[in-house]
Picture (cartoon, helix red, strand yellow):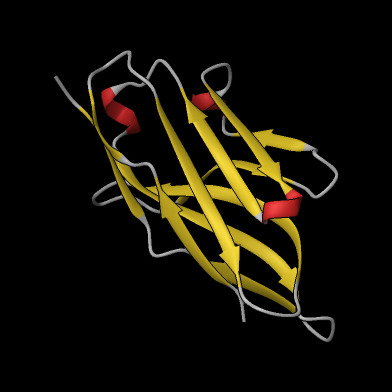
Length: 119
C-alpha cells in the first residue's frame, strides 16, 4: 500500500508563492498519475492539477498560468509550484495518486495540508 505525505503548506500573503511536495512511499508499487486537489470550507473537493507518468499535465482553469505541477519519478514525488497566490486559493490541498501493486489498480490520498493566502 502506498502512503502519501505532503509538505510545504502555510500562510502566505496575496501575490506570494508556495511550493507543495508530496512523496509516495511503500513497497512494490508503480505510480501512474499524480495530482493535487483542494477543498475550501463548505465546498467540494476539486482538481487543481494532474500529471501523468509521461508528463502530460492538466490544470483547473482557475490556476492556469499561476500553478505548475511537476514530478520526479525516481523519487516518487510530485510538486506544485504556486505563484501569484490569491485569497481564493486558500484551502486544504490533497495529494492523490493512481498506482498499481502489480496486481490491482489502486488509489491513495494524502492527509492534506493547509494553504492560507491572507494579508
